[in-house]
Image (cartoon, rainbow, N blue to C red; front, side):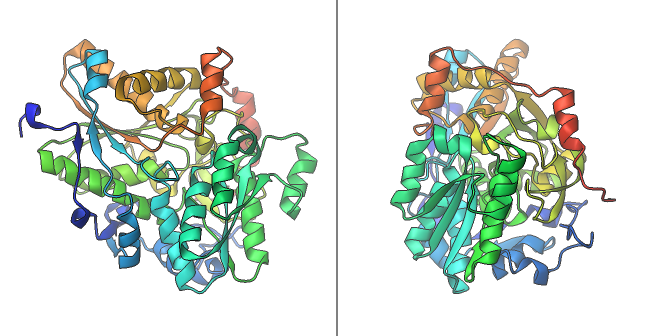
Length: 458
């Protein structure tokens, strides 16, 4: 297909929604290191995980070999509310940048949750319902995951308890109210409602919280409340599996218009959107069928990839969760209260961490003022107000497009537009009023987090 015939938006029809999730681990030569029991230091078994997670999700979490998991028809039918999502050619942004690069984005914000998070929320809620559970608990940073899960639980008639990072609870009251509208209870974390929350408050009075804190509280409540299980919106293998629908659709849409991306970019917090976007492309790269340049973009204030250590660490601040081998800043690291709340996690997906460690993808850290500069340019060019998290990918995409302008290369750039920023207007107000600042942790700040890493070999 010639360039002139490529539409602004490329849609698949509902019959082309993928019927199976792709498990990237099946093609990884070096598998992600197993989760460890913090008490014994040995790999966790399914029996040890089922008191925390739903049984089917445990099976998906531990399976390193099955390439495709069929998507239950009830989930496919739910997906039809907002999927397939469009692959968009950013013609207007290209014109503003005067670049020879061709920029595409996969837009995941066309649903009530405003982000890609609904792809895994409905799957996890579905398996909880199938198991006969009463409800689920979770944490949320910026609120996209909590909103998505509350929507999925309302659809299936499940109770939903959300622990929301305190700074986001205060900065994003409207997203909190969407969760409550869907019937979820929302508690600012850390809170006095849990033992681990009270402990964190005693040790860090006035803390703005972190995803690690909220995870600890949600797990405590799930494991102590009969009929409940814990669900997570990022990091875990099962979540990246469900999010592979993003990349599978993107690849199918590119095939439909006869285009192959050269550079694939995603924001990186815990890894759900990035892992989902790159999965089929990385699969081709691992199998030697194609090559792509893949870039993870994270906030300079929480630089897990670019300044973290590849080590076993707790996934939560309260140190009650399993140990995961990942790029981490230490479970005790409390990020600054930047406005990309969904990226304020101290660690990274074990899958993405292993891929990065093996040199199969790149990573870069960017400051939030430059991120909002890119967000503003994108909004004025393309007509969508992007989420702060998504805008990290936009920043890198613009930088790569300008590099193409310097070299004259006509690269095809794909980035993930994970969601919209209409509930993030406090952040935009700070930027527009010139009150936004950049915080980059010092080496001493990071060393305090590293000092708490558990002594585990491997």
